[in-house]
Image (cartoon, rainbow, N blue to C red):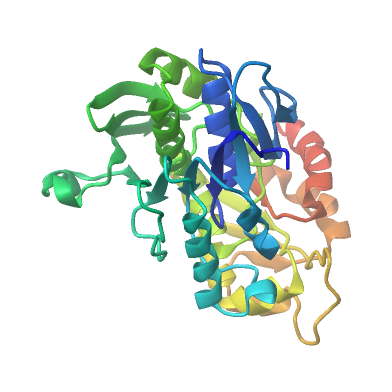
Length: 366
């Protein structure tokens, strides 16, 4: 109802949708274009998940696939960032999950467009007249040497990572914007940034406004949220709660802080998700140098017999791992503080309530 009559820019996907929609909203809001926005996280630039405009009919919305709620939208422009199966308690099968995204694409207005990450297992069902674009993150030299027909419509190149900063060049049809700086410098945000910049560009945001907007983007809370960024200790809080999100988060942090020990503190979210993806969670968590695994956060669910964090823990292949109760975490962190270098706290449950207490402990580290 709130979006009726507006030009809706809907960002959907298993993961990446909160950050990407927030980027789009910030790029539009700080430009001459302006927008309204309803986001799935509190954007730190505005201390809100709501933006209103008296002038603009553009409305950025995070389109959530849980319970098929994104089927109520009629997008003008839509983005699909990913479609890794999730919420199988609702959908039952991966095929039904993908079909839900395909139905979402059929709702795009005939005068609009779909921007989808290249390689996603979704076959668009677009109305006649809807434009279709693809995007990807950084393309390597081999990909750039292929024919243009194999390239994404929008992509990044010349990605430079180092010293806690990331720069890249944005490339699209008849546009190249060099030296874009990521305000939240984690590699996965190159991909999110390409999608957001593409939407901003298609809506008339200038290259200068795009560069300023990306550099000043502070991110949503709990999405690669830096709480400590000191020479001897880094603390990051992230909402990742799906195996693919975990993998992207861990690899991004390890690349940003190459050569430093990365300790992950993970709280699984939902019994059904743990049951359905235990092996995938273990594979992602095995990318860490050290793992501290907490009990499952149940959210809306009742316990399932035999489903505990233990089934993930047993399959994790790294030697430096421990399984503890949430109530034990602060004591463990205090005892190990001197050995910690980069700490990544991840999960969609109430682990966020422990971030500040952990920060206070680590901030005293000599």
